[in-house]
Amino acid sequence: GRTRQLLSLDDFEAAARCVLPRPIFGYVCGAAEDNRALADNRQAFDELALVPRVLCNVAQRQQGVTLFGQRYASPFGIAPMGIAALSAYGADVALARAAAQARIPAVLSGSSLTPLEEVMQAAPDTWFQAYLPGTPERISALLQRVAAARVRTLVVTVDIPVAGNRENNLRAGFSTPLRPSLRLVWDGLARPRWLCGTMLRTLIKRGMPHFENSFAERGAPILSSRVQRDFSERDHFDWSHLARIRRQWQGTLVVKGILSPADAAQARRHGVDGLIVSNHGGRQLDGAVAPLRVLPAIAEAAGSAMTVMLDGGVRRGTDVLKALALGAQAVFVGRPFNYAAAVDGQAGVAAAIELLRAEVDRNLAMLGLTGCDQLGPQHLLDRRLPWPLVP
Ligand code: FNR
Image (cartoon, protein in one colour):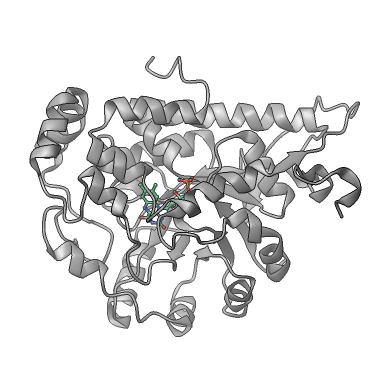
């Protein structure tokens, strides 16, 4: 198939660059301002070296983890990504189905273009990420809709009080509302597989894409200027809103976008079940600390009361294991799975999941481990410091 030559998650980026029009590719790969947070997400992993143990008999190894009472086959999942259905036809369902088949978690974005009911039908274990509408009544209505769709795990993203400064989007010719600019049309003509296989197919089979999951009711079409207004009413949110959500939401509640141990402690006091330590893939506050750097302190603040997860820059099995060694129970991966959907739909996502699964398996063995729960700080060193100086 189309993914036979793709040997690592990064290979999917190069392949997707060839498939997608530049405005769409730019929207996925881009981050905020000078991409410092984006770069540091990778840098933080690269600064850590692994310390393997040998002669451990690792024949009986398995990488499964339990999150919120549910057993998953691997310690990684698919992060929520808005507008994914512009990267590939039916991308939201493709991502959720591939994850379900591999028995890993997938999170549907609140800025997605597929009704959550449809995704839940295709993959009933999918988690749902909400961007909260601006009034308590509308938040309640959205939560009722989400519960009625039988979502069990709600992820509330809290790192967008205002939209990040995505200069890169503008430079690449992408904006919300989406403008069918000369550039997009021209680029689309040069990418016939995307134009016919994704865009025209979507328009013919499903009609004009709308933001389907921002509210209890259907949101704005992607071309409408209403989009901007809908997204610009979140700067007044505070912990009292989260407290209200906790009172209303019976299921598992995860807060995404925490970087401060003090906020982790706040979340814990509010009865939150889990955290995703995240700087939104570097797409919000540029220069925000890399999640990996604050993970140990946040894991400590969480104690055993909350499940701590992380996303941002995870590209290799070794990255997954480094995060677990610093206290994460699981990690999420964003962009590479979007690229995989663009390259080959559900099969592409399945291929990417399998690559990462195989890497985790191989790396566990080479570290001398048979399970993820055995990872700890003893397996890591700061690669810039010589051995005796490291605590
Ligand atoms: C995102 N992210 C995101 N997060 C969220 O909570 N809701 C959303 O709708 C989106 N949308 C979105 C779109 C695209 C194209 C990207 C790349 C990212 C952030 C995402 O969930 C995750 O935090 C990062 O993508 C993780 O970093 P990596 O793995 O992409 O480096």
